[in-house]
Each structure stands twice: as structure tokens, then as C-alpha cells.
Amino acid sequence: MKRFLVVLLVATAALCARPALAHHSFSATYLETQSQTIEGEIVQFVFRNPHSFVHVNVKEKDGTVTTYNIEWGGTGQLNNTGVTRETLKAGDVVIITGAPGRNPADHRIRMVTLKRPKDGFTWGQQPGQTVD
Image (tube, rainbow, N blue to C red; front, side, top):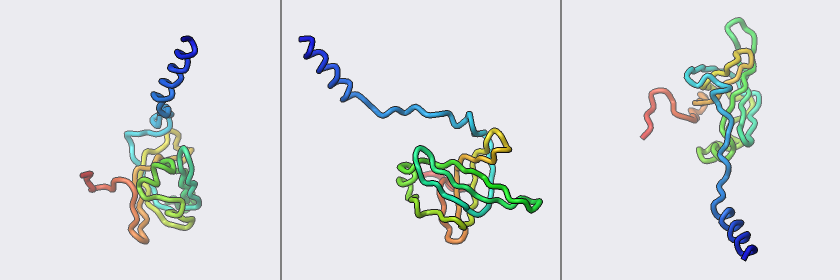
């Protein structure tokens, strides 16, 4: 009987198990109520889990170049929206809007929208666009 209960308990746990949805808080790293837009040239696109990153060189008003680190979704989330590791290439000029990092010296943004002007590729809800 004891063995049966252990087997039943293990089987129930296995059937009821769900992937853990625990995650760090974006609001701990980013100012979620604010928005920042940058335009620049991609130097690297890191397509990986749990988050992908786009590194963009932005020419500042004073002529200096700053590299911004833009955090994006994981590979599964991006694949579901048509983004693959081949979507963005070094040298692509992009316009990115998102939540700025809490520490301005880090030059971090959590991506909300991306636009590549050369071919009109867009990702995310663009300004003026409504969700059906």
C-alpha cells in the first residue's frame, strides 16, 4: 500500500507539473513607464535564450559613438513573431524604441519596437498602429 501511494504521488506530480514561470522583474532594470528611441547601426545580434540582445552603435549629437545594449525576447518568442537568427545583420540601420535602463550610463533599452528603414521590416506595435 505504501508503495502504491508513493507511485500515485509521483504520477500525480508528473501530470500536474508545469514549467516554472518565475522571472526577474523588468521594472528592476528598466524604467517601464518611460520611452527612449535610438537610431543606429547594428554591430551584433545575439539570438539566444532566455533573452536575445541587439547591440547598436548610435552616433550622438557631439559626434561620439555609443553602443546601446537592447534586450529582446527569447528565441521561441521571437520565432513566433517571424524573427530568426538571420533577420538582423551587422550593418543594418535600425530605429528602436523601448524602456530605458534605470542607470543611463549602462545604455540599456528593453525593446518595444524595431524598424529597419531600408526594407520596411518592423517588429512590435508601431506608433499609431492599433491591435485588432
